[in-house]
Length: 174
Image (cartoon, rainbow, N blue to C red):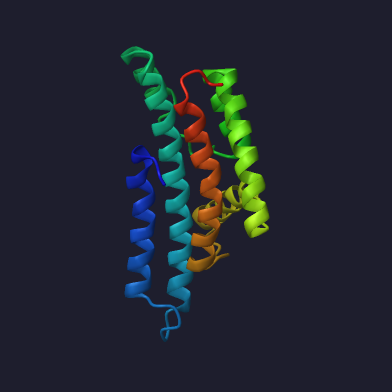
């Protein structure tokens, strides 16, 4: 189950995919190129949503320690610009508290093992894939995925984002 703070952001992706499939159904005549562009825009949107979730997580955590810290965090992380790789997330967590980073590592490692066992795919590598597709489409217009592949990759990559969120939820960081 998604945390309430992130649910709205994740549900937008599902709604967007539903609309894409309704207005440009897979296999409909003449829509292949358009659907490829939609897939590119989808991965850009997914990456932007992840950035928002990371920022919401950090600002929410900072708000527990005062409005000044919350405001500082909001301003300091106002533009993440796809700097949300696994290593970036570890660095952000450590900036707040080394125990939060350790908790993130612990939660993600446990979930990564389960995800690999169930799907055969590493969620960290899936996050990297989303970020690579995003970069390639946003900066070079390269169409390298389908809507279905993008959403399947998103479902696995979101394990990393949710683990990051959960690491910040425990005040003690332990």
